[in-house]
Amino acid sequence: EMSTSLLIRSTVTVPPRSPVSSWDSCSCSRRRGVLGVASSSSSLKASSSASLSSSHAEARRSFMFVPYGAPLQQASVPTITCDGLVPGAGLQLTHWTNNDTPEELYADTSTEIAFNFLKSSKYAERYEKAGVVNNHYDGDGVFSAFALLEPEKALQHEELLTAAAAVGDFGESPSEEAVKLNAAIETIGAQHDDDEMAYEHAFRLLPEMLDNLDAFSDLYEASWDAINDGYRALHSGKVTIELCGDVAIVREPCDAARLAPEALHRGLCELGADGLSAKACQRVVRARRTSHSDEYLMEVEKPGHGWVKRLARRQTIMDADGGEMAETLNRAFDLGDTFQPGGEGGLVALCKTATGVRGVTPLDVADFIREHKL
Image 1 (spheres, rainbow, N blue to C red):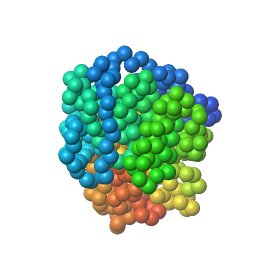
Image 2 (image 1 turned 90 degrees about the vertical axis):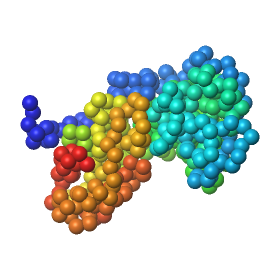
Image 3 (image 1 turned 180 degrees about the vertical axis):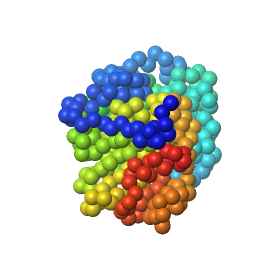
Image 4 (image 1 turned 45 degrees about the horizontal axis):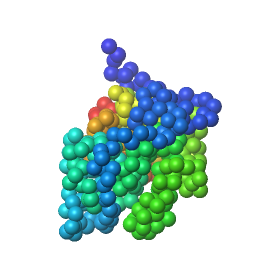
């Protein structure tokens, strides 16, 4: 049996090689079928909608936007809270924390849950004319609500919409087409100060996007280029991902842009450490050298899906309090208050260093996190 010290130091790095010519040659899609999506983007084209219940096919649902944190006022029709958790709404079709989504419909993203709902006859009659409610704008919210509002059209593109939802909520990279679609939807959101107006805009354009995404390159190309730049940086060796047990270390030079979550996911995929792998990483340590060669700025975060507490297919990620983790690391390495809660990772951020650190390497931090299961 491998010794503990050797196990901790056992590392794997994404090998430098020439940049890939196609995003869809990503080995994780080819190896395991991420989200059930085959490696070629052509496989994400329209699929059969034969599984749609006749009651759902005849449904005439309407969208109801409720500002975040506000309850739904009394509605004259049954309601479905889709993606966001809206107090006062009826059936929950969401993966948000503390959800009561029916077990038989549950999945890792709200979009997958919406498609499970469409394929079930159990709820069809009661919610045939339901109000579809959400309280925030993002890709998973748009795609799941669209599925309930336009079920026939949505089911024709189920794989693409499901994959795009995972891009937006988890920073995954199932396919080129999914990454581009989510980027376009995010751009629409950024064009509006009002989420309700953003939904109207997205619902208006999404049917055409699903049929001819290339026509909307102005909405996705900037994000797509940034994500591709990150993946090229990985495969040129400028940025590296190293596995230290179930902790991934991302090393970035001081002059590199922050590695996009989608590019990070591809790297984890190629190392067999993504969320669908049995050896999914539990923590990510991002390390950026400062202008001093022996000094690092570091962030600790969960992998992209780690904010979701209830998971159906992906590996469950250990919960953690960023403040407590920061205090533990500061004590362990005698760093005062250098580590502080937070970071640039949004929902998956745990803690970060406020200043550059000398004498403590990213591998030291990763070893400690792994050994103490932080």
